[in-house]
Length: 423
Ligand SMILES: *[C@@H]1O[C@H](CO)[C@@H](O)[C@H](O)[C@H]1NC(C)=O
Ligand SMILES: *[C@@H]1O[C@H](CO)[C@@H](O)[C@H](O)[C@H]1NC(C)=O
Ligand SMILES: *[C@@H]1O[C@H](CO)[C@@H](O)[C@H](O)[C@H]1NC(C)=O
Ligand SMILES: *[C@@H]1O[C@H](CO)[C@@H](O)[C@H](O)[C@H]1NC(C)=O
Ligand SMILES: *[C@@H]1O[C@H](CO)[C@@H](O)[C@H](O)[C@H]1NC(C)=O
Ligand SMILES: *[C@@H]1O[C@H](CO)[C@@H](O)[C@H](O)[C@H]1NC(C)=O
Image 1 (spheres, helix red, strand yellow):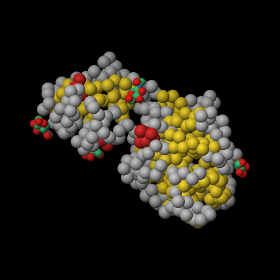
Image 2 (cartoon, rainbow, N blue to C red; image 1 turned 135 degrees about the horizontal axis):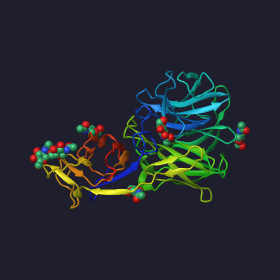
Image 3 (cartoon, rainbow, N blue to C red; image 1 turned 30 degrees about the horizontal axis):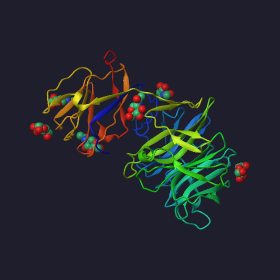
Image 4 (tube, rainbow, N blue to C red; image 1 turned 60 degrees about the vertical axis):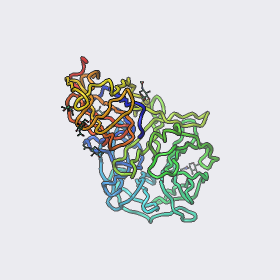
C-alpha cells in the first residue's frame, strides 16, 4: 500500500441479507458456518447442480479441502479429502473411467488420490499409483492445472522442463497418468488455467514467476490444443498486477441465457498463508480480438442457471477525514446514533484535507452516512505508507471496533445499519 495525497474513505453501502449474496473479490470469505474458507491454489467444478471447490488448507497440513455450493456464493465446508498426503499444493479434481481423482503437487511430483466411491465428495481418498514426473525427461514441474475438453478428454497443464509452460495428455488409465506432450509454447510462466469459449477458441491464462507477489497475468489463445499458441496479452491493466492476484483456474458457467467465464485467482499474502484470500472476477472474452479481460467488479453475482453475471452496482460516497468530527486529543468528540468512528493510531497525513496527529486516544466520526435500516456490507478503500502506523479500527453505531488491518486492502465487513433508514 502507498500513501494517498489525501486520506479518503470510500464507503460503499449495499443492502444485503445476512447470508452471502455476492462475491467480493479479495475480501475475507467465510463458509456457511462463519469460518474463513481455506481452499488455496484450487479450482471449482460442477457436477449436477452442485459446485465443488477444491483447494488446500495450510492449517490442515496443506491437504486438499472440499467445499460445496449451489450458488457459488454460499459455500458449505465438506471436509479434508484425505489424510494420506500432506504438503500437497494446487490440488485438482480429475474424473476418468467412472472414478474421481485428486491430483496435486508434492515435492514437485504429481501425487494421485482416488475417491472410494463414484462421487468427488469424500474424506477418504487414498493414495494410488506412483508419484510422477513429467515425460519425457523427468524434469520437475510446478503449479499444475487441469483442463477438460468438450469431448471429455483431460489435459495436464504445468510449468515444466526449465520452467516453460507445457500441455500434456492425461491417459485415461486406472489410475490416470500423465501422457504425451501436446504443446510447449516456450513461455516461462506458471499457474496455468484454461477454458474454451463458445466460439471454439482455447484461452490459456498464466502468471509470471514472482513467487507470492502478484504480477500481470497473460492470456494465450489457440484454435487447437496443439497450437499454434499466440498472444501473451494482458488480462488486466499491467499496473494493477491482476488486481493483486495470481491465476489458479477458470470456471465456465453454461447458462440458459449466456455462457460466462470466471477467473479464479488467489490473492496471496506475502507468505501464501491461510490469511490469503481469493480474487474471483468475470472474464470478458472477444473471439474476434482473441482477448480475455477481467471485469473489475467490487461485488458481483452470477446466476448459476442463466449464467448471467451482475455487478451489484453501488454508489460511492467519499468521506474526507477533514470533514469528520474529530474526537479526543485532536478535537471534541460528538456522538449520535449513527456514526462511523475511525481511529488511526499515530498516523500523520500531510494535506490540508487531512486530520493531523490522530493517535490511539483520538478518532474521527462521520455522522452523515446514509443507511438502509438493515445489515449492510461496508467496504473500505484506503492507502497508507506504514501498515503498523496506519492500523485502522472502524466502529459503526457504537458497535465493536473492527481492526481493518486484519482484513485486506479490498476488504469489507457486515455492519448493523439498523436505525439508519431515515438518515
Ligand atoms: C445463501 O444461503 C442463505 C441461507 O441458506 C440463503 O438465505 C441465501 O438466499 C443464499 N444466497 C443466495 C445468493 O442464494
Ligand atoms: C478429443 O479430441 C482430441 C483432439 O481432437 C483427441 O485427441 C482426443 O482423442 C479426443 N478424445 C476423445 C475421448 O474422443
Ligand atoms: C466506485 O469507486 C470505485 C473505485 O474508485 C470505482 O471503480 C467505481 O467505478 C465507482 N462506482 C461508482 C458507481 O461510481
Ligand atoms: C473517540 O474519542 C473519544 C475521546 O478520546 C473517546 O471518548 C471515545 O471513546 C472514542 N470513541 C471510540 C469508538 O474509540
Ligand atoms: C495522543 O496525542 C496527544 C496530543 O499530542 C497526546 O497528549 C497523547 O498522549 C497521545 N496519546 C497517545 C496514546 O499516544
Ligand atoms: C490489528 O491487526 C494487525 C494485523 O493483524 C495487528 O498487527 C494488530 O496488533 C491488531 N491491533 C489490535 C489492537 O488488535
